[in-house]
Length: 530
Image 1 (cartoon, one colour):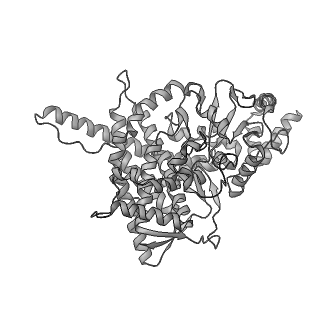
Image 2 (cartoon, one colour):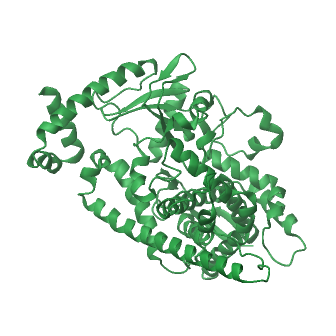
Image 3 (spheres, rainbow, N blue to C red):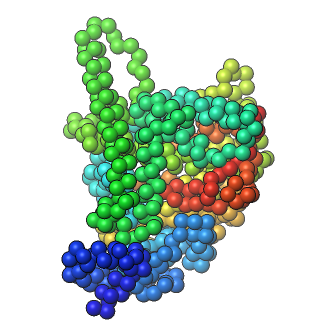
């Protein structure tokens, strides 16, 4: 019973007396005892199998590194220390529950990310918490289910589709900039970027995904509020209490009830939109079939339209449930990540006036002689330096700090190291992007790293902001188009300098790695209208 008592003590230290009393009061003690024995045997097996990897100092043989992964500025600095010490990889135990290999060198990252999708599995540590929201979508599914969905979704991100979104990006950016102009005219020049930019990317996505004008940049929206709450609750579940990782505990908590309520709002909205779009498309088909006149030019197809029309090689489309899952995933994965990338790019340009001015001049030269201030599709390839600045910001402040994978077979890595099947591989995007054996002066902002003439000297998989391989981010082209449009238009209309964080009373920025990289107390910039 000594080991059982040890595990229960761990539970008590992590969750408090009430959770332990709940276990006993529900008569689950015997079940817990058997589960504990299996857990400890599994822990011993993984500890032995992962002995080929260096192991940072642990709290104890049982606790491992529990509590040492912090989503704070200090947590990122801890990753810097790991990279400095171990160069390429190390093993990491979250108590006896999760066994990880952390990787932060391209030579070790590449064989994992490039592994066939048929043996790659999205693990439960991160992705299980997203399943109630995103269903069995392309982000979470595995095997043939994933393969089919990826094939069906790929046309939604074709260049011809992305071209039609340019007008949306211009319009949503203008709405945000008009709001900034009003605030600057009122003397409110010190603005928090994430609040504004996140609403702008949500506005864009709602229009691109559903042709839905939420007006969320000007007024509150129940759907938008629910998305924000779901994101916050997922972070809290993952980081605050390890027992909340198990559904049978989490759904009985107050946080679980809040999650269900927000989930109902989001799913109801998506379900209604899909049903309305299906009805509209059917009506359009009937009208065209009955008309002897050739159909007029089609309006821009949104994401849901494409999902409704796409078919696989057997002539089968997505079910309503599958369409809702993919639409929810598009909204979840597309708004926060792109908002983070835009904010950090503006922040880095605010800190480096000479780079900002060079970008601004590039945009001004591009639109010289035009009546309006809009970025067109053909302009995107004519913003080389602005694109270099965006890529360097994606390296230095990547929106997603890590991706996790597990594999159905053992994975061989350099140095005769083997990751046993079922182990969680945490591919540290942050660690790889800040590895001094890969990048010279990795903490400095230097856009020249991405000069096309330097590309041949860049190590494969040294730059992976959108992951890589068969399970890379399907929406990365969408994100890069929106990034270039919004950054270019912002620099055309405003001059940026570092702002003052009211919480800190200074322009100092403390990074906050949550689902995406944010900043403690917000990311503040000083705006001056051009």
